[in-house]
Structures are given as structure tokens and as C-alpha cells.
Length: 194
Image 1: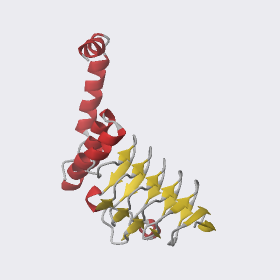
Image 2: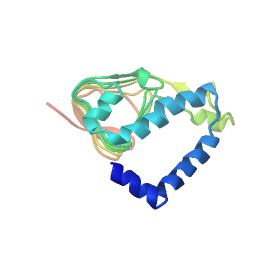
Image 3: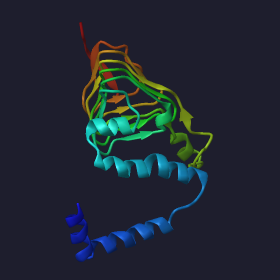
């Protein structure tokens, strides 16, 4: 590690990095929202690059046996209820701002988006600002033994029952009872599982 540090120092990369960090820090806005975001998302995601999948899951407070790949993001982790042995793939976004529950032995594939809020009304009514009253939040629930292939999207307020396979490139807009394979946009039941 010392050799790498010295190499960066000698060829000027360390000074360049320090200058870029100073420039970024000069853009910081010291209000409650930005400080919270910086602490809960930005700095945490910077630190998580040093961890393995299991270590990263523990770092985010997920139960024993969970794994979380690089570049996955949990929005409002304090509102996430997660079972054991959950896998979260690269680039997945777990939005728990409206409440998110994921059952045990579930896999959330790479670039899967699990939403618990929607804000399209803010755009239509020219009210696209933070904390707009037009942002709608609803709990999203993913059962146990679920596989969500990525990339896929699960809308806010949707419940996916236990033992469900969501095929890649699906958009789940309504509740799924469970024990089935679903796919498409909007997702529909393709086959029931025994």
C-alpha cells in the first residue's frame, strides 16, 4: 500500500486527486438534507468499494447470510426490512423511502429497481422540488424465495408473493399472488408453480 501511495505521489496523481476533492468539497451545501444524504449515501458508497459482498451487506445492516454487489444503493435504509440470505445485484436500487420489505432467500438481480415512491405528479404539476406534497409513497413488499431477474422494475406499493420468478426486462405494476413465473411489461403470470 505504501508503494502505491508513493507512486501516486511521485507522478502527480495524488495532488490531482486532492485538487479534485477540494473542488468537490467547495460545492458542498451545509443544510440538513445534504448532510444526511452525504452521510447516508455518498460517503457510505465510497467506503463500500473496499468490501466484499458479505461485508458490504453487513456494512448496510443487512442480516447474516446476505450479499450485496457493487454499485447497489439503498435509499432510506432505516425503512428497509430484510430477511436472511438475500442477494442484491450490481446496480440495483432499493427505494425504501415509503417502506420496503424483502423476504428471506430472495434474489434481486443486477439493475433491478424496487420503488416505494413515485413523483411523476410533481412534473405534471410543475412542482418538482424536494419534499413536494405530490410525491406519493407506498410500502412495497417482496416475499421469500423470490427471484427478480434484472433489469426489471417493481412499482411502488406492489406486493410480490412468495416463490415468484420475475423474468428479466419485466415491469411489475400490480400485486403478484406468488408461486408463479411472471414476465413482460406490464408483467403477467406466465406459469403457475407447484
